[in-house]
Image (cartoon, rainbow, N blue to C red; front, side, top):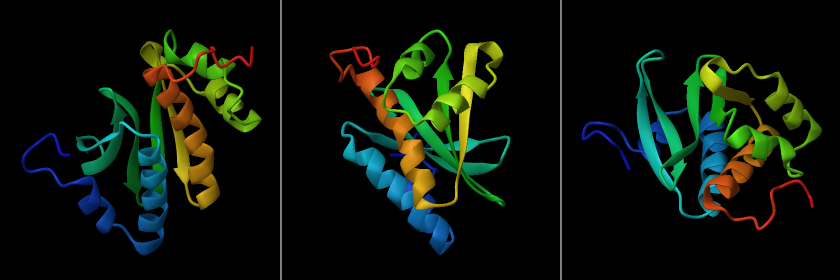
Length: 148
């Protein structure tokens, strides 16, 4: 879905990528959509001057992906007073991803977790964040993610 009538679809944005980037973003897209209840949108980034694919659940953005000259970069917004406490208690993140959360600055109480996507391993690593945010938004867990 596109918000603006003249905006491209997520498929059109992906189709315009080079083959290696197209394969990586397609893998991420498929993994996100497997979670269920996903809405795809394209957003125009006025700073970067490009259309970016973005993935939402229940009206909340899970992530978006930029196609920079240097490569793909996935981004997730993390509210320091809302989602971050849940995220930092999650047993579903690797130690490296826990460090990434802790080391990301938070201007105006929102962190932008940014991860270069250069390999299928990067897609899998970023999907840890996406799954936890999807669970947070959808209330899919009975527990609080702390393992107890």
